[in-house]
Image (tube, rainbow, N blue to C red; front, side, top):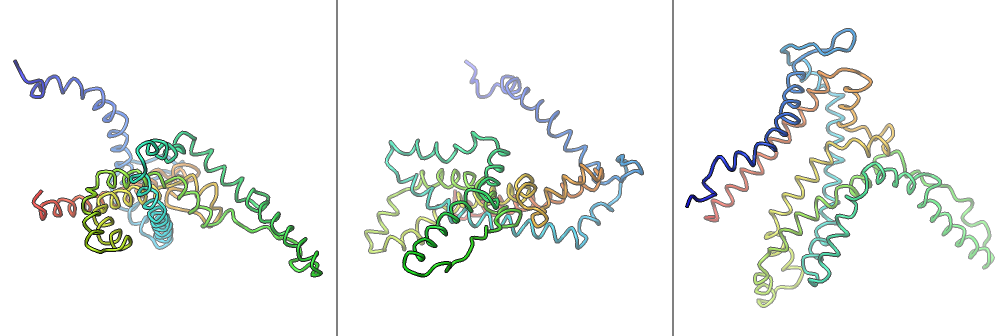
Length: 303
């Protein structure tokens, strides 16, 4: 009897629908955008096919490099915050009792069940001048003012002034952390769940403290999950469009907004394509470095 694993025709039939979908709706459109990146913009906004590096030269002008650098900084801050918040959460889920793990994982992926636009607009309701956060602060302010009035110190605080929490970079970072935190937690959890706990027990038996075991044993063993989570979070944050557009105001312009502007009001598809592929090239280089380092680590360990 023939081994079904060696039946190439069987696998070709199984792969044909997905391969067709990827080629028609992903590879071909991506190739068209790549061709556009070497073209130009006509007098009426049409894309002229050609071969020139002018769009890439424009992409590395100082004004655009400033936006790219700001996007990298925002993505880095978001990634660092997600790592600091996500590692303890993933660790808690991995070491939680079996009956609670599914519930905790469900809570982590629950935001995916809500549309991203709705989640972003919810931060407007929270952070605006008459939003939930300022209402809460105003309530505390009034209670404190009543208390000091009662002890004979009226008008010590004066009138409450709402904090400007919206349409700035902190609002963008907060929303990006909210959106991308699950992308950090899930790879970390997958790594920590498969962790050989005998190493942790050996470290504790040899006299290491909990903190020393965490820093010297758990974190190094969880490094593959950390690297995957960092890459996912950083790449997704770098290309974010919705949160900077709705929450950032004039301060929150990121590379994703600049690209969208080229494909929208500016009608300069060639330049927008060059910007898109500039980010894609950088992403491929980072992924290649990550893959090379991982391969060398496995080779060094004899895996």
